[in-house]
Image (cartoon, rainbow, N blue to C red):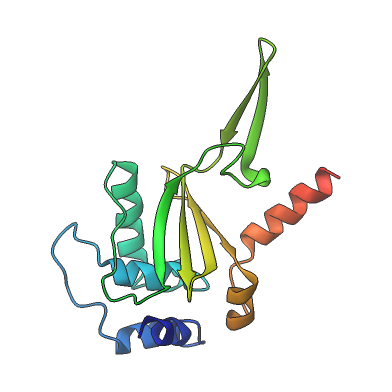
Length: 167
């Protein structure tokens, strides 16, 4: 079951757990395994799992070229990942929203192009914001943080800095 796989992924031996699941068998060029992508985006830091880097980079390139987000047929009820395009100010975190005044009009721009949301057991787990240059930052839900113990804190750090500068 995917939830069990994600729980294994969240452990200290994330890369070992993924390898033991046999999810890194060679695949056709440009074909991205949606289940692997779901697991990688649910990890505490996909960039620190060498086996996650190529498929995630490929998905980001595919999205940048208008390809659909891959699906995982084995994810089970309540476990999913989906993509949405960023749109400031509504669908962009405030620390990544730029505001411009021009000709008596307020314009908004998001530093990120899209967001990939992962849900586990029908609850938000992670939101990974990405841009065309390949930069990503992940917002981990309280549930994810309680399971991980440690995670990439960049999103939290940048949000705290933004809140401090915008009282």
